[in-house]
Amino acid sequence: MLLSETTNRPPRFSQRRRPSRHAVCMRCEVVRERDFKLVSRRILDLSETGMLVSSDERLLTGESLLVSFRVPFSTVWLDAEATVARVVHGRRPGDDHRALGLAFDAIDGGLVDALRRNLRGLPPPLPRRAAWLGSGRVALPS
Image (tube, rainbow, N blue to C red; front, side):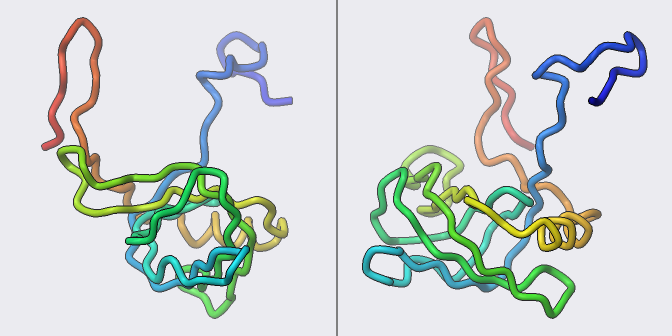
């Protein structure tokens, strides 16, 4: 169990680290599982647990997909099942296009390690929208 260095207790949920997202522009193939229709060929950001891909196809949250892409800076291909976790319709300010947020269902541990290792050092994606600060205040992305 991971213990906090200052309190010697397990960290609260809000203190646990999420997998980092990284800005990339990579080729991929994402197909819908039920009819094998190609829905995307470009990754916009990537983490060890999922990715954001551009897509003009109309998909629903929860749809099952098959994804294939090369792990950055390697010759290793990653083939995985994924689920649509988020649909970006491209209507909000800061949304440049339609996109799909995909969550990987299960990836071999060795591939997750390779992905994590090779993503390290890549920049995070740029914020697209204003951040809500509470009390009616909004911070605009610079």
